[in-house]
Image (cartoon, rainbow, N blue to C red; front, side):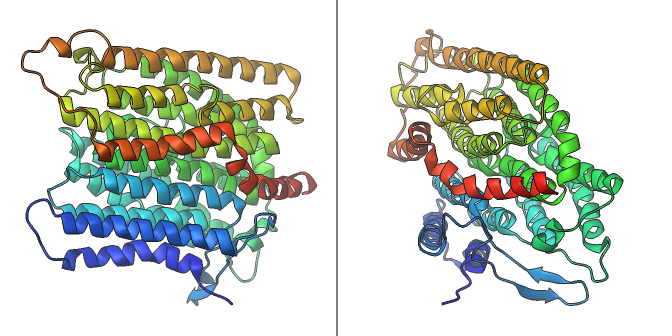
Length: 501
Protein backbone atom coordinates (compact mmCIF):
# COMPACT_ATOMS: atom_id res chain seq x y z
CA UNK A 1 0.00 0.00 0.00
CA UNK A 2 1.56 3.31 -1.14
CA UNK A 3 1.08 6.11 1.38
CA UNK A 4 2.71 9.59 1.29
CA UNK A 5 4.35 9.33 4.75
CA UNK A 6 7.10 11.86 4.12
CA UNK A 7 4.84 14.53 2.59
CA UNK A 8 2.61 14.33 5.67
CA UNK A 9 5.61 14.43 8.03
CA UNK A 10 7.05 17.51 6.27
CA UNK A 11 3.79 19.44 5.82
CA UNK A 12 2.03 18.63 9.12
CA UNK A 13 3.90 21.02 11.50
CA UNK A 14 3.61 24.17 9.38
CA UNK A 15 0.02 23.53 8.26
CA UNK A 16 -1.18 22.64 11.78
CA UNK A 17 0.85 25.62 13.05
CA UNK A 18 -1.11 27.99 10.80
CA UNK A 19 -4.28 27.27 12.77
CA UNK A 20 -2.62 28.52 16.00
CA UNK A 21 -3.79 32.04 15.13
CA UNK A 22 -7.46 30.90 15.33
CA UNK A 23 -7.23 29.35 18.79
CA UNK A 24 -9.19 31.06 21.59
CA UNK A 25 -7.31 33.53 23.81
CA UNK A 26 -7.33 32.43 27.43
CA UNK A 27 -5.56 34.76 29.86
CA UNK A 28 -1.99 35.97 29.62
CA UNK A 29 -0.22 32.63 29.86
CA UNK A 30 -1.70 31.28 26.61
CA UNK A 31 -1.69 27.69 27.82
CA UNK A 32 -3.97 26.60 24.98
CA UNK A 33 -1.41 27.63 22.34
CA UNK A 34 1.44 25.98 24.20
CA UNK A 35 -0.30 22.65 24.71
CA UNK A 36 -1.62 22.67 21.15
CA UNK A 37 1.96 23.10 19.85
CA UNK A 38 3.35 20.40 22.15
CA UNK A 39 0.61 18.01 20.96
CA UNK A 40 1.46 18.69 17.29
CA UNK A 41 5.16 18.08 18.02
CA UNK A 42 4.38 14.83 19.83
CA UNK A 43 2.00 13.67 17.11
CA UNK A 44 4.65 14.43 14.49
CA UNK A 45 7.34 12.57 16.47
CA UNK A 46 5.09 9.52 16.92
CA UNK A 47 4.11 9.55 13.25
CA UNK A 48 7.76 9.76 12.17
CA UNK A 49 8.79 6.97 14.55
CA UNK A 50 5.92 4.78 13.36
CA UNK A 51 6.74 5.36 9.67
CA UNK A 52 10.43 4.59 10.25
CA UNK A 53 9.81 1.51 12.38
CA UNK A 54 7.25 -0.16 10.11
CA UNK A 55 7.96 1.16 6.61
CA UNK A 56 11.73 1.54 6.54
CA UNK A 57 14.11 -1.40 5.91
CA UNK A 58 17.36 -0.93 7.79
CA UNK A 59 19.44 -3.24 5.63
CA UNK A 60 18.51 -1.52 2.37
CA UNK A 61 21.01 1.21 1.43
CA UNK A 62 18.76 2.61 -1.31
CA UNK A 63 16.34 5.54 -1.03
CA UNK A 64 13.05 4.50 0.58
CA UNK A 65 9.57 6.00 1.05
CA UNK A 66 10.31 8.10 -2.03
CA UNK A 67 7.54 10.20 -3.58
CA UNK A 68 7.62 12.31 -6.73
CA UNK A 69 4.95 14.81 -7.72
CA UNK A 70 5.29 17.23 -10.63
CA UNK A 71 5.45 20.77 -9.24
CA UNK A 72 6.70 23.22 -11.90
CA UNK A 73 6.49 21.80 -15.43
CA UNK A 74 8.70 24.25 -17.34
CA UNK A 75 11.71 23.48 -15.17
CA UNK A 76 11.70 19.79 -14.34
CA UNK A 77 10.97 20.48 -10.66
CA UNK A 78 9.39 17.79 -8.51
CA UNK A 79 8.24 17.59 -4.92
CA UNK A 80 10.52 14.66 -4.21
CA UNK A 81 11.04 13.62 -0.57
CA UNK A 82 12.81 10.32 0.18
CA UNK A 83 15.03 8.98 2.97
CA UNK A 84 17.89 6.58 3.48
CA UNK A 85 19.76 5.47 6.61
CA UNK A 86 21.73 8.70 6.69
CA UNK A 87 18.60 10.91 6.91
CA UNK A 88 16.80 8.91 9.62
CA UNK A 89 19.07 9.98 12.53
CA UNK A 90 18.88 13.76 11.88
CA UNK A 91 15.08 13.60 11.27
CA UNK A 92 14.43 11.79 14.57
CA UNK A 93 16.85 14.18 16.34
CA UNK A 94 14.85 17.12 14.90
CA UNK A 95 11.57 15.72 16.20
CA UNK A 96 12.99 14.97 19.63
CA UNK A 97 14.75 18.32 20.19
CA UNK A 98 11.89 20.43 18.76
CA UNK A 99 9.36 18.72 21.06
CA UNK A 100 11.56 19.34 24.11
CA UNK A 101 12.35 22.93 23.03
CA UNK A 102 8.60 23.64 22.77
CA UNK A 103 8.11 22.18 26.23
CA UNK A 104 11.03 24.31 27.47
CA UNK A 105 9.60 27.55 26.04
CA UNK A 106 7.33 28.11 28.99
CA UNK A 107 8.21 31.68 30.03
CA UNK A 108 7.25 33.07 26.58
CA UNK A 109 4.14 35.15 27.17
CA UNK A 110 4.61 37.93 24.59
CA UNK A 111 3.09 37.03 21.18
CA UNK A 112 3.14 33.39 22.16
CA UNK A 113 1.09 32.40 19.06
CA UNK A 114 3.69 33.79 16.69
CA UNK A 115 6.51 32.21 18.74
CA UNK A 116 4.98 28.73 18.59
CA UNK A 117 4.06 29.08 14.92
CA UNK A 118 7.69 29.95 14.08
CA UNK A 119 8.91 26.91 16.04
CA UNK A 120 6.62 24.68 13.95
CA UNK A 121 7.65 26.39 10.69
CA UNK A 122 11.29 25.62 11.54
CA UNK A 123 10.30 22.03 12.27
CA UNK A 124 8.90 21.62 8.74
CA UNK A 125 11.91 23.30 7.14
CA UNK A 126 14.39 21.11 8.99
CA UNK A 127 12.64 17.81 8.23
CA UNK A 128 12.19 18.97 4.62
CA UNK A 129 15.94 19.63 4.28
CA UNK A 130 16.87 16.23 5.68
CA UNK A 131 14.44 14.36 3.39
CA UNK A 132 14.77 16.24 0.06
CA UNK A 133 15.80 14.27 -2.99
CA UNK A 134 15.59 17.28 -5.31
CA UNK A 135 18.16 20.08 -5.29
CA UNK A 136 15.69 22.96 -5.60
CA UNK A 137 13.43 21.45 -2.91
CA UNK A 138 16.52 21.17 -0.67
CA UNK A 139 17.27 24.84 -1.31
CA UNK A 140 13.69 25.96 -0.56
CA UNK A 141 13.60 24.00 2.71
CA UNK A 142 17.06 25.34 3.61
CA UNK A 143 15.71 28.90 3.14
CA UNK A 144 12.49 28.21 5.07
CA UNK A 145 14.71 28.16 8.14
CA UNK A 146 16.02 31.73 7.90
CA UNK A 147 13.01 33.94 8.58
CA UNK A 148 11.74 32.00 11.65
CA UNK A 149 15.21 32.13 13.28
CA UNK A 150 15.56 35.85 12.44
CA UNK A 151 12.18 36.64 14.05
CA UNK A 152 12.75 34.35 17.05
CA UNK A 153 16.04 36.11 17.82
CA UNK A 154 14.92 39.68 17.03
CA UNK A 155 11.62 39.54 19.00
CA UNK A 156 12.43 37.26 21.95
CA UNK A 157 16.18 37.85 22.33
CA UNK A 158 18.29 39.78 24.82
CA UNK A 159 19.48 43.42 24.79
CA UNK A 160 21.53 43.20 21.58
CA UNK A 161 18.97 41.03 19.82
CA UNK A 162 18.55 43.20 16.70
CA UNK A 163 22.31 43.30 16.09
CA UNK A 164 22.57 39.50 16.49
CA UNK A 165 19.52 38.78 14.33
CA UNK A 166 20.76 41.08 11.55
CA UNK A 167 24.20 39.49 11.66
CA UNK A 168 22.60 36.04 11.47
CA UNK A 169 20.45 36.92 8.44
CA UNK A 170 23.34 38.63 6.60
CA UNK A 171 25.66 35.67 7.05
CA UNK A 172 23.15 32.92 6.27
CA UNK A 173 21.45 34.73 3.39
CA UNK A 174 24.92 35.55 2.00
CA UNK A 175 25.85 31.85 2.16
CA UNK A 176 22.55 30.88 0.53
CA UNK A 177 23.34 33.02 -2.54
CA UNK A 178 26.17 30.60 -3.36
CA UNK A 179 23.76 27.68 -2.92
CA UNK A 180 21.24 29.40 -5.20
CA UNK A 181 23.87 29.87 -7.92
CA UNK A 182 25.08 26.26 -7.69
CA UNK A 183 21.63 24.60 -7.81
CA UNK A 184 20.54 25.70 -11.35
CA UNK A 185 24.19 25.40 -12.51
CA UNK A 186 24.22 21.69 -11.63
CA UNK A 187 20.70 21.17 -12.97
CA UNK A 188 21.34 22.78 -16.36
CA UNK A 189 24.83 21.46 -17.06
CA UNK A 190 25.43 18.90 -19.77
CA UNK A 191 21.94 17.51 -20.32
CA UNK A 192 19.31 18.39 -22.89
CA UNK A 193 16.59 18.48 -20.30
CA UNK A 194 17.45 20.12 -16.98
CA UNK A 195 17.11 17.86 -13.95
CA UNK A 196 17.50 18.41 -10.22
CA UNK A 197 16.94 14.82 -9.14
CA UNK A 198 19.70 13.61 -6.78
CA UNK A 199 19.79 10.14 -8.41
CA UNK A 200 20.37 11.56 -11.89
CA UNK A 201 22.91 14.12 -10.65
CA UNK A 202 24.87 11.41 -8.80
CA UNK A 203 25.62 9.76 -12.15
CA UNK A 204 26.45 13.06 -13.86
CA UNK A 205 30.12 13.88 -14.49
CA UNK A 206 31.46 17.43 -14.79
CA UNK A 207 34.80 18.88 -15.96
CA UNK A 208 37.05 19.01 -12.88
CA UNK A 209 37.30 22.84 -12.87
CA UNK A 210 33.51 23.22 -12.90
CA UNK A 211 33.09 20.56 -10.22
CA UNK A 212 35.54 22.46 -7.97
CA UNK A 213 33.59 25.71 -8.52
CA UNK A 214 30.28 24.01 -7.61
CA UNK A 215 31.88 22.34 -4.60
CA UNK A 216 33.38 25.58 -3.32
CA UNK A 217 30.09 27.48 -3.75
CA UNK A 218 28.14 24.87 -1.79
CA UNK A 219 30.91 24.66 0.79
CA UNK A 220 30.55 28.40 1.58
CA UNK A 221 26.81 27.92 2.24
CA UNK A 222 27.49 24.98 4.59
CA UNK A 223 30.44 26.77 6.21
CA UNK A 224 28.10 29.52 7.39
CA UNK A 225 25.50 27.07 8.69
CA UNK A 226 27.85 24.51 10.29
CA UNK A 227 29.69 26.92 11.18
CA UNK A 228 33.22 26.50 9.82
CA UNK A 229 35.85 29.13 10.67
CA UNK A 230 36.21 31.96 9.57
CA UNK A 231 32.44 32.18 8.83
CA UNK A 232 31.41 31.31 12.39
CA UNK A 233 31.22 34.73 14.05
CA UNK A 234 27.40 35.04 13.82
CA UNK A 235 26.97 31.97 16.04
CA UNK A 236 28.24 33.21 19.45
CA UNK A 237 26.37 36.52 19.03
CA UNK A 238 23.11 34.82 18.05
CA UNK A 239 23.37 32.27 20.87
CA UNK A 240 24.32 34.96 23.35
CA UNK A 241 21.07 36.85 22.69
CA UNK A 242 18.50 34.21 21.66
CA UNK A 243 15.86 32.75 24.00
CA UNK A 244 17.08 29.37 25.21
CA UNK A 245 14.44 27.31 23.37
CA UNK A 246 15.65 28.99 20.14
CA UNK A 247 19.24 28.15 21.20
CA UNK A 248 18.21 24.51 21.60
CA UNK A 249 16.99 24.42 17.99
CA UNK A 250 20.05 26.30 16.73
CA UNK A 251 22.62 24.11 18.51
CA UNK A 252 20.65 20.87 18.25
CA UNK A 253 19.55 20.96 14.61
CA UNK A 254 20.44 24.06 12.59
CA UNK A 255 24.24 23.52 12.79
CA UNK A 256 23.75 19.92 11.71
CA UNK A 257 22.15 20.93 8.40
CA UNK A 258 25.51 22.22 7.13
CA UNK A 259 27.32 18.96 7.92
CA UNK A 260 24.42 16.99 6.42
CA UNK A 261 24.59 19.01 3.18
CA UNK A 262 28.34 18.48 3.00
CA UNK A 263 27.91 14.70 2.88
CA UNK A 264 24.59 14.58 1.03
CA UNK A 265 25.44 16.99 -1.82
CA UNK A 266 29.17 17.71 -1.93
CA UNK A 267 30.35 14.22 -1.20
CA UNK A 268 27.69 12.21 -3.07
CA UNK A 269 27.30 14.43 -6.13
CA UNK A 270 30.80 15.95 -6.47
CA UNK A 271 33.19 13.14 -5.48
CA UNK A 272 36.28 14.27 -7.46
CA UNK A 273 36.19 17.75 -5.95
CA UNK A 274 35.58 16.27 -2.49
CA UNK A 275 38.68 14.17 -2.85
CA UNK A 276 40.70 17.34 -3.67
CA UNK A 277 39.15 19.41 -0.87
CA UNK A 278 39.15 16.72 1.84
CA UNK A 279 42.72 17.41 3.09
CA UNK A 280 41.74 21.09 3.47
CA UNK A 281 38.60 20.09 5.36
CA UNK A 282 40.79 18.09 7.77
CA UNK A 283 43.19 21.03 8.25
CA UNK A 284 40.35 23.53 8.83
CA UNK A 285 38.65 21.06 11.19
CA UNK A 286 41.84 20.65 13.23
CA UNK A 287 42.40 24.44 13.41
CA UNK A 288 38.75 24.92 14.35
CA UNK A 289 38.94 22.46 17.27
CA UNK A 290 41.94 24.28 18.79
CA UNK A 291 40.89 27.85 17.94
CA UNK A 292 37.30 27.57 19.20
CA UNK A 293 38.34 25.71 22.36
CA UNK A 294 40.93 28.42 23.19
CA UNK A 295 38.45 31.24 22.40
CA UNK A 296 35.76 29.56 24.48
CA UNK A 297 38.03 29.68 27.52
CA UNK A 298 38.26 33.49 27.23
CA UNK A 299 34.48 34.12 27.09
CA UNK A 300 32.85 35.75 30.11
CA UNK A 301 29.31 35.23 28.80
CA UNK A 302 28.07 31.72 29.68
CA UNK A 303 26.04 31.21 26.48
CA UNK A 304 28.89 32.44 24.28
CA UNK A 305 31.24 30.01 25.98
CA UNK A 306 28.89 27.12 25.18
CA UNK A 307 28.50 28.47 21.61
CA UNK A 308 32.27 28.38 21.01
CA UNK A 309 32.35 24.85 22.38
CA UNK A 310 29.78 23.95 19.66
CA UNK A 311 32.10 25.40 17.01
CA UNK A 312 34.96 23.33 18.42
CA UNK A 313 32.91 20.10 18.40
CA UNK A 314 31.80 20.65 14.80
CA UNK A 315 35.53 20.51 13.89
CA UNK A 316 35.39 16.75 14.60
CA UNK A 317 32.61 16.27 12.04
CA UNK A 318 34.71 18.09 9.43
CA UNK A 319 37.68 15.83 10.11
CA UNK A 320 35.45 12.74 9.91
CA UNK A 321 33.95 13.83 6.58
CA UNK A 322 37.42 14.73 5.25
CA UNK A 323 38.85 11.29 6.13
CA UNK A 324 36.85 9.58 3.31
CA UNK A 325 36.60 6.30 5.23
CA UNK A 326 33.35 4.70 6.33
CA UNK A 327 34.59 4.73 9.95
CA UNK A 328 35.40 8.46 9.78
CA UNK A 329 32.11 9.44 8.17
CA UNK A 330 30.08 7.29 10.56
CA UNK A 331 32.01 8.98 13.38
CA UNK A 332 31.03 12.38 11.92
CA UNK A 333 27.36 11.32 11.83
CA UNK A 334 27.61 10.07 15.40
CA UNK A 335 29.16 13.42 16.41
CA UNK A 336 26.29 15.27 14.66
CA UNK A 337 23.67 13.34 16.65
CA UNK A 338 25.65 13.35 19.91
CA UNK A 339 26.37 17.08 19.82
CA UNK A 340 22.72 17.73 18.88
CA UNK A 341 21.68 16.32 22.26
CA UNK A 342 24.52 17.75 24.36
CA UNK A 343 24.48 21.27 22.84
CA UNK A 344 20.70 21.56 23.22
CA UNK A 345 20.88 20.40 26.85
CA UNK A 346 23.67 22.82 27.83
CA UNK A 347 21.81 25.80 26.35
CA UNK A 348 18.60 24.71 28.05
CA UNK A 349 20.31 24.52 31.45
CA UNK A 350 22.13 27.83 30.89
CA UNK A 351 18.74 29.40 30.12
CA UNK A 352 16.94 27.91 33.12
CA UNK A 353 19.71 29.05 35.47
CA UNK A 354 19.51 32.55 33.91
CA UNK A 355 15.74 32.58 34.58
CA UNK A 356 16.50 32.04 38.26
CA UNK A 357 19.56 34.17 38.99
CA UNK A 358 19.35 36.76 36.15
CA UNK A 359 23.11 36.62 35.61
CA UNK A 360 24.84 35.71 32.37
CA UNK A 361 28.49 36.61 33.08
CA UNK A 362 30.57 33.87 34.68
CA UNK A 363 32.62 36.21 36.88
CA UNK A 364 29.43 37.42 38.62
CA UNK A 365 28.27 33.87 39.40
CA UNK A 366 29.45 31.37 41.98
CA UNK A 367 27.99 29.14 44.65
CA UNK A 368 24.89 28.11 42.69
CA UNK A 369 25.44 24.45 43.59
CA UNK A 370 24.23 24.97 47.18
CA UNK A 371 20.79 26.54 46.51
CA UNK A 372 20.23 24.62 43.23
CA UNK A 373 21.61 21.07 43.51
CA UNK A 374 19.44 19.58 40.72
CA UNK A 375 20.54 22.11 38.10
CA UNK A 376 24.13 21.62 39.31
CA UNK A 377 23.88 17.83 38.86
CA UNK A 378 22.37 18.08 35.38
CA UNK A 379 24.76 20.78 34.19
CA UNK A 380 27.77 18.82 35.45
CA UNK A 381 26.54 15.65 33.72
CA UNK A 382 26.24 17.41 30.36
CA UNK A 383 29.60 19.17 30.83
CA UNK A 384 31.12 15.72 31.29
CA UNK A 385 29.36 14.48 28.15
CA UNK A 386 30.69 17.52 26.27
CA UNK A 387 34.29 16.82 27.33
CA UNK A 388 33.93 13.24 25.99
CA UNK A 389 33.75 11.26 29.23
CA UNK A 390 33.80 7.49 28.46
CA UNK A 391 30.28 6.08 28.65
CA UNK A 392 28.78 9.22 27.10
CA UNK A 393 28.00 9.73 23.40
CA UNK A 394 30.71 12.39 22.86
CA UNK A 395 33.48 9.94 23.72
CA UNK A 396 32.29 7.30 21.24
CA UNK A 397 31.85 9.86 18.44
CA UNK A 398 35.31 11.38 18.86
CA UNK A 399 36.97 7.96 19.18
CA UNK A 400 35.32 6.71 15.98
CA UNK A 401 36.53 9.84 14.14
CA UNK A 402 40.06 9.10 15.46
CA UNK A 403 39.92 5.54 14.09
CA UNK A 404 38.59 6.89 10.80
CA UNK A 405 41.66 9.07 10.28
CA UNK A 406 44.18 6.50 11.43
CA UNK A 407 42.77 3.87 9.03
CA UNK A 408 42.35 6.25 6.07
CA UNK A 409 44.27 4.97 3.01
CA UNK A 410 44.14 8.42 1.40
CA UNK A 411 46.68 10.14 3.65
CA UNK A 412 50.34 9.55 4.41
CA UNK A 413 51.44 8.60 7.91
CA UNK A 414 52.89 12.02 8.87
CA UNK A 415 49.76 14.13 8.15
CA UNK A 416 47.66 11.51 9.99
CA UNK A 417 49.90 11.75 13.06
CA UNK A 418 49.76 15.57 12.94
CA UNK A 419 45.96 15.74 12.68
CA UNK A 420 45.58 13.15 15.45
CA UNK A 421 47.96 15.14 17.63
CA UNK A 422 45.98 18.35 17.09
CA UNK A 423 42.72 16.54 17.87
CA UNK A 424 44.29 15.22 21.07
CA UNK A 425 45.22 18.77 22.10
CA UNK A 426 41.61 19.80 21.39
CA UNK A 427 40.40 16.99 23.63
CA UNK A 428 42.68 18.29 26.40
CA UNK A 429 41.45 21.89 25.98
CA UNK A 430 37.77 20.87 26.18
CA UNK A 431 37.89 19.79 29.85
CA UNK A 432 39.76 23.01 30.68
CA UNK A 433 36.96 25.34 29.51
CA UNK A 434 34.14 22.95 30.53
CA UNK A 435 35.37 22.43 34.06
CA UNK A 436 36.33 26.08 34.55
CA UNK A 437 32.77 27.01 33.47
CA UNK A 438 31.28 24.62 36.05
CA UNK A 439 33.71 25.83 38.73
CA UNK A 440 32.88 29.50 38.21
CA UNK A 441 29.13 28.89 38.13
CA UNK A 442 28.64 26.41 40.92
CA UNK A 443 31.48 26.57 43.43
CA UNK A 444 32.61 29.28 45.84
CA UNK A 445 30.36 31.41 48.06
CA UNK A 446 29.50 34.42 45.90
CA UNK A 447 25.76 34.02 45.37
CA UNK A 448 25.34 32.05 48.56
CA UNK A 449 26.42 35.11 50.52
CA UNK A 450 23.90 37.45 48.89
CA UNK A 451 21.45 38.52 51.62
CA UNK A 452 17.81 37.43 51.14
CA UNK A 453 18.79 35.18 48.26
CA UNK A 454 16.27 32.45 47.73
CA UNK A 455 16.43 30.64 44.40
CA UNK A 456 14.06 27.93 43.21
CA UNK A 457 15.79 24.76 42.14
CA UNK A 458 14.82 23.03 38.93
CA UNK A 459 11.14 22.08 38.76
CA UNK A 460 9.63 18.87 37.33
CA UNK A 461 9.47 20.35 33.79
CA UNK A 462 13.20 21.19 33.72
CA UNK A 463 14.11 17.83 35.21
CA UNK A 464 11.94 16.02 32.67
CA UNK A 465 13.56 17.84 29.70
CA UNK A 466 17.09 17.27 31.06
CA UNK A 467 16.56 13.57 31.79
CA UNK A 468 14.94 13.05 28.35
CA UNK A 469 18.14 14.34 26.74
CA UNK A 470 20.50 12.59 29.16
CA UNK A 471 19.08 9.12 28.44
CA UNK A 472 19.99 9.03 24.71
CA UNK A 473 23.41 10.59 25.49
CA UNK A 474 24.20 7.71 27.86
CA UNK A 475 22.38 5.20 25.61
CA UNK A 476 24.51 6.10 22.57
CA UNK A 477 27.64 6.17 24.75
CA UNK A 478 27.04 2.60 25.91
CA UNK A 479 25.57 1.21 22.67
CA UNK A 480 26.53 3.41 19.68
CA UNK A 481 25.06 0.89 17.22
CA UNK A 482 21.71 2.65 17.82
CA UNK A 483 22.94 5.34 15.44
CA UNK A 484 25.65 3.54 13.46
CA UNK A 485 23.39 0.69 12.30
CA UNK A 486 21.18 3.27 10.53
CA UNK A 487 23.85 4.86 8.37
CA UNK A 488 26.52 2.20 7.94
CA UNK A 489 25.14 0.57 4.74
CA UNK A 490 24.37 3.90 3.12
CA UNK A 491 27.86 5.29 3.78
CA UNK A 492 29.43 2.15 2.30
CA UNK A 493 27.27 2.65 -0.81
CA UNK A 494 28.42 6.28 -1.14
CA UNK A 495 32.07 5.32 -0.72
CA UNK A 496 31.86 2.48 -3.25
CA UNK A 497 30.76 5.04 -5.88
CA UNK A 498 33.70 7.10 -4.71
CA UNK A 499 36.45 4.71 -5.40
CA UNK A 500 34.93 3.42 -8.65
CA UNK A 501 34.27 6.75 -10.33
